[in-house]
Amino acid sequence: MRIGIVSDTHGDAKRLSHALEIFSHHQVQVVVHCGDVGSIQCLRLLANAAPNVHVVAGNTDRHIEELADEAESLGINFAAEAVHVPLDDGKALVATHGHDENLLGELIADRQFHYVCHGHSHMIRDEGVNGVRVINPGALHRAKVRTVAVLDTVSGVLEHIVVR
Image (cartoon, rainbow, N blue to C red):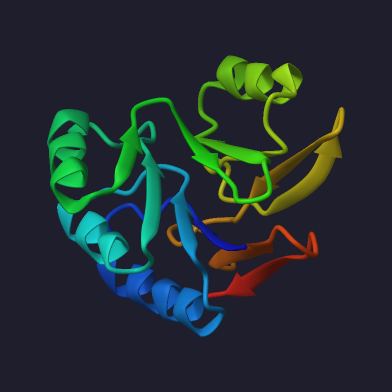
C-alpha cells in the first residue's frame, strides 16, 4: 500500500495541489494529513486526492468544529488529536500533529502502531524508536525546503519529495 503523508499546509491550497499531483503520480491509495490543514478549501482538495483520506487537526487549526463538519460531509476521517489508519497488512498507522509532545511520546511508547506520523516541526524525520517507525513528512508552509512523503508499506521504502 502506498500512503501519501503531508503536513502543515496552513491553508496554502496551491502548494497542496502540487503535493497532491505528486501523490497521484505515485499512485497513493491513502492520504494522511498531519495537521495545520488551515482551510476548508484544503480539505476539499484532500477529499479528491485518494479513496481513503485521514486528517488530524493541528495547533493552528482554530476552527476545529467547522473543519470536522466539512470533513464528515466529504467522507474524510478527521480527528482533533490523533487519527488512526488501519493498513491492509494488519499493521496500523496513527497521525498526530506533534505539538503535544506528551501525546506524541505516548503514541510512540504504546507500540500499538507500526507507524507514528506527525508534523509541527516543519522538519523531515524517519527514525525507528523502540520498534516504531516515526515519520514527519516535513511541511508545505514556512519550511526552507517544502516536502511531502510517500510510504510504501510493502517494501518499507519512505521517500521525501520536494514540492515546488
